[in-house]
Length: 308
Image (cartoon, rainbow, N blue to C red; front, side, top):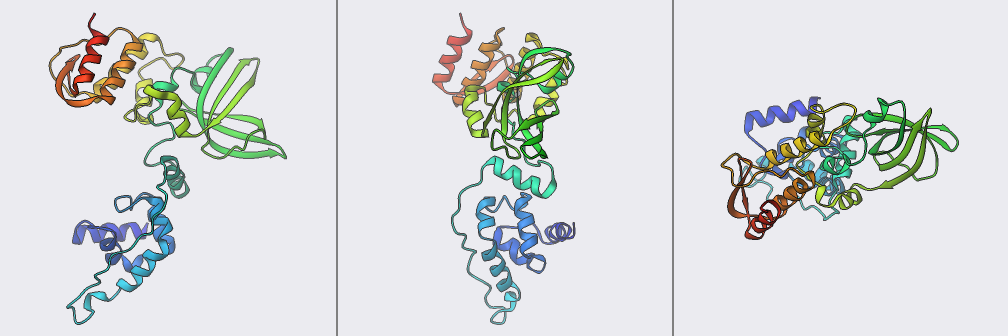
C-alpha cells in the first residue's frame, strides 16, 4: 500500500517516529481522514495511544497535520510548532474491539484471537474437529466465536462457528441477538442428525471470569494449535493433556536446576501454574529443571502442593 511504503521509507531515511506529533508532522503530506483511520484500525499507531482515543480525535489530528505543513520555516526557522496534539479522553478499547477494528481493515485477526488465553479452560469441553470425525456423539459442548452470519430466511440464519480446531456452519432461528465475533457455548448431540440443546452467548470478559485460574494470557491460539498438533486429532488423552500442561510451564519458566518435580496430576499442574502466575517475587526456586522467581507465600504454597 502506498501510504505504508511512504511511512516505512521516511522511517528508514530519518529514524523512528518519536511520538504522535513527530509522526504526523513527517507524514503530513500523505495524511487524510481515510488514511489516518486505516492506520489507527490496523494497529500501526498503537505505540502512540489507544485506538479508541485516536479514532475519537481524528479531526484534531488532521487539523494539527494541516497546520504542521510549512511550520519548519515559520518565523525564518527560529521556531517550530511548540504545541502538542491535545487528545480528548476516551474509553480504552477492549481486546475484542481492537480485533474487530483489525478485521474491518484486513479481514483477518492480526494482534490476537478472541480465544487467546482460554485453551486450558476450553479443552475441558470438546472441539469441532473431534465430533466431525465421529459418526455419533451423544453429548458435546464447544466454545467458539461467530466467524460469519448469513441470513437464510426471514427468521433463520446460517452461522459459521470457529474454535481452536476448525469451524462448522449451523442453521439457527433468530432466538438471540447474534452478532459477528460473539462467543458462544453450544451444547448439542449428534445421532443421525445434528441437534442443538442449548446456546449461551457471552463476552470474552465473561468467559475469562468463568475460566478463573485456567485463564493463561501466555497461551495464545497459535500456541494452542501447535500443542494440539502433537496429540490425537480425534481425542486428547489424559496423558496428552499432562504433556501439554508441562509445556505451558516450560514456556513460563527459564532453565535451571531441579528442586521440585512436576506433579503427576493434571489438577495439581493447573494449581501450580496459577501459583506461579499470581505470586511473582524475588526468591529463586526450580521446578523440573526450570528456574523461577516467586514470593515467599508462593514458595510455601508450592511446598504444600508438591511436598508430601
